[in-house]
Length: 258
Image (cartoon, rainbow, N blue to C red):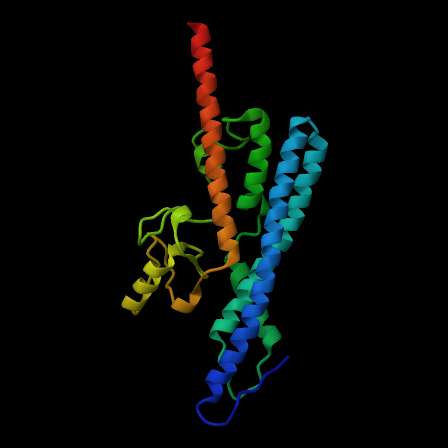
């Protein structure tokens, strides 16, 4: 697959860039719709696993976990492909030589994939699945291989890396227009981060310790982020409910002792 630039005057490059941006945006939109559906499937599989665990169907739970791992590998590759398409669409500039788009997209895909861990067992989606199953019979207890103090961290873990916007100070779940950095995956309030980038020629991610630099075309809003934020809200509600149930149980036990 190849492309040539328009040799006629200075307007050729912007026109070609615009032509790339539109189809890339359309492809990303289609891919994101599928990614969102896959996230819904993960949640459904987690709920089914919890029901099976309540019935002590451990073998079926293990089979379902293996299926989640297989689907998760496909899901990860699909998200990398989507990010690669979006990145090429935002940054591509045609030159005098033919462009090998297959190689260009593959190189960009490997950049995204190379920055991520390939261990599906450590992926937040898998951890959420395993923790939901574990909590059926062991609520409040650490999973095998974890310390007691890790419980709060893992129960609150999600695919969103920061829980508050570093600029506005608002919780991620309360942002009016959440956006995410393509390179570092941190989430910000759109108005705050765009203003920050415009004021700084070298805009480093405002998250403490993050070495990435930001550009306005590399900070995006996508439907998947909204789904993840909604999942974050749901997890917070579940944790709050579990805490209330535990407190209520402890109160009953204390009354019985009296």
